[in-house]
Length: 94
Image (cartoon, rainbow, N blue to C red):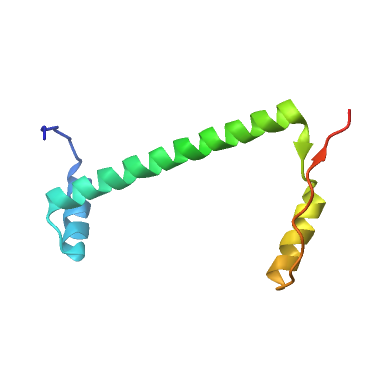
């Protein structure tokens, strides 16, 4: 484990101390947990961005999509408890 120095404003330091106390944690463990949560959140966002880019690239290369009107109706029917088939992928015509 290594040491990193962070500088907090007095206001933020007080807020962190209060939040840590409410959570029943030390300020140190609270800060470590917050940093770990933020790092995980950013990793998940990057993964989502990568997945979106890959899916968009597939759409561009194949031209296959599902029309929004079909997806919307499918979701409405599913929310209503109906057993309906999934919408069909179609190839965009030029």
